[in-house]
Length: 336
Image 1: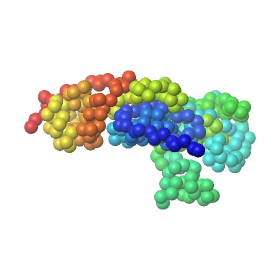
Image 2: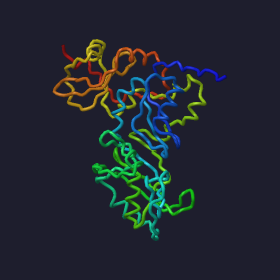
Image 3: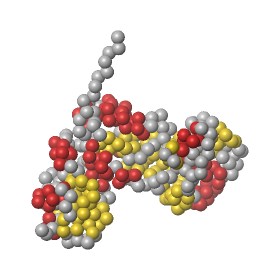
Image 4: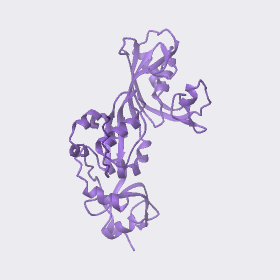
């Protein structure tokens, strides 16, 4: 007789977990595992990593999901291994080899010259094996059916690109790549373009995201490490919700203005126009939401509901807190 499955009692959990995604799991599979370990009610991630990629994957829980969009535009840094001489259908180790070519003798000067040419703003055609949708259908679905559909080039930017000759894990000629790039950059496609510029073909054998925005791999925890912790210790690995708003200008409201702001009301202020503001209440400087200042008004954007605010205040204090840097107490600037 099969024993009944134990039902997990979900609970409100608020914060950001910086996960080092393992090889072989999709971003959603990693998210669901972390969600199960934290017994969390609501969760989401801030952009996907392929199953064959590892590294920094910020996971948002509870109130943090309101601000996950803020992080989608963040710059990303990747380290990759590009095998030269073989092209695959997918641009990575998952696909079948579809072409081979000789690998020319390459000097560091050759690599530096290509890196210099490929740095900057450019258009990149998304690969067929991607989750982008066309007519409501993911591109990889067309690719698996043997169809090649037209794709609109996307504007991306490579901010830094460093390369060095190496060997991959199987001993084939390879290039190690370190790239800092804008959102929407496909490193598989970048690898194929690098190989072409070097006079051969290639595909990625390994890919790791080492940084996204201001989050780095040194701040991350693995699923195995998270699972090894006691349940109350797992919650302590969460960062405060406002870690997603680190580039916002923080302001603190008094009790009266906090209540009005939280109900969606604009507040008058003498502060200068500011595009991104994180707004806090006076009690323990709890986050109320995000806003912007325009024309002498603090205008709410995304607000935490009172229940979330109360739960955050009662939640076990995370050890990874976000100090309020250069906060402006603005209550004296507001008028009725």
